[in-house]
Image (cartoon, rainbow, N blue to C red):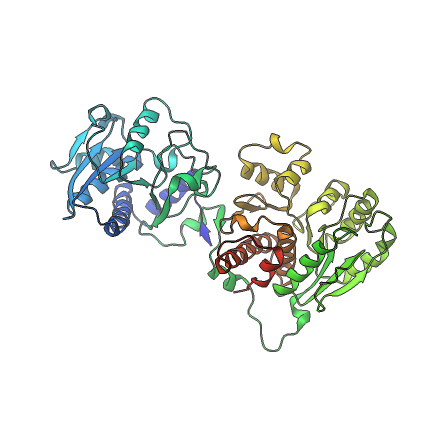
Length: 499
């Protein structure tokens, strides 16, 4: 898992680098800037431009200090013709590290103020080291005009740590945000790179390790994203002596006369991701339901929804299951929802229950609140859970989702771009996937994947977050194989992989 450090966590991380690793702040800055310089040179070389003229904009904080170090290190490179540092800050307003590194600049490096900068001067590379991870989308004073000057250059643009004008957590951007071709971020990526305006501002992102143990940042991070290797590490290896009963029994409940396919796809996905046994209980069984899935046809209302007289049948099936998935294609019949709420209150203390789609309408009807409840709403459904209109959701839905999950003591997977999985304390962003996955049934497949992973013994927060990653990875596999053409949910199932 890759940690995504936020500003307050970076401060704690920096302190430990000093206290436990014995790195003075000035030495830590030197190491970080040296790593950033190496990545900068590696990125420039394939461009075939040179000799290079580099403009580095430095602020008064430690990000500016990084910029001063980079300027000094670049000056020793034979491929660099000249380096110009531009800053509007006076030495007395700078942090100690920034001031020291400004004073270390060799005389060959020209240091000017923004009002001395000639917009017609030719620069091959423009480096933004104005604010970094301590910034936001609120640019004040002269900063908007200064960043606009940097953006106007016809040059390869590089941001150090975080582009100026981009909020490192929410991804909200100022209209004059520095628009980077590449962002060299220090030690870890930042959540804002993947959210809202972030992907349009950061360009290619490269992580520059600052020279401490790679596990150190994870100690302070509350937000993560997965890599492919995490699948192998989190899913148990199958021993030769095991049987289907070692990998859990999933029960999928849902469907109506008009939507028999939704629960069928959930059941199929649960089986494909490795659940030992999968049962499907629905009023109508879709004819393409895989024969490996055990099906039970339930009594239905005239509107095609599950009848409340199926309660005892479902109670028996839920009691013998390892995990239940409720909601795909369920419909909105209030008697159906009330009956299922009763069963959820009986069962949820004993086993995890994934609730999706119209099953989310049962959430206000049952009393149990605990980590065994996994809700998987999209933003409209999340707004309904909060008794509000979608348009009234806060801009920062991540914080809103974390607060909701913590308050309700549940696991929440909010379908968004990127999706967020959280229990209010630890969160995961699903940063893979593609827009061709926005197709009917894709969410039903995700429900089945999460249920299948729960059946194999993963904790709710892990099953939901890793399930989202695997689901998105399958979608990327489909997109890669079909030339980025529209896909169907069944295609995602066929590309599911455990490792």
